[in-house]
Length: 129
Image 1: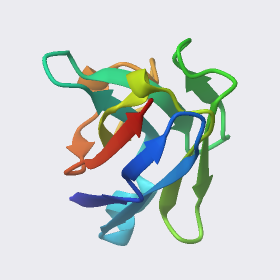
Image 2: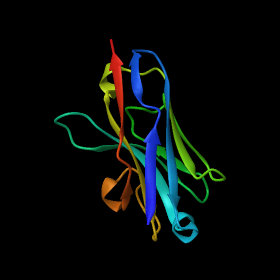
Image 3: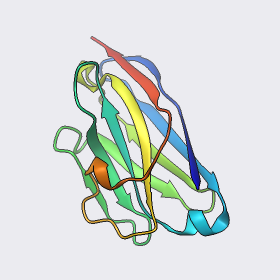
């Protein structure tokens, strides 16, 4: 089992920045079985969409077109923590942001939500114009 806890959400004005964190915990074997992690978001009335993902083994990343050049996903393996640095925020970035992990099998599509088997509770990001 893997537990994921997000933090760092809040309210900012357009053009501002936020950094989200996701702390992973659980049995050592479970943590080491994580092959990829990702950030997803869901706005009211919309489906959950992939924002950014990372292969934990080699650090390869993938981003949604809507956030490329503005968001950066990174990991601190020593702290079992995933980050999402969000710059130049826009009102359309407003959503609940979720951290996700895929454990026990390799990842084929970092932004595909159905392959992730562990999810955090989410942290709200609100961007005002």
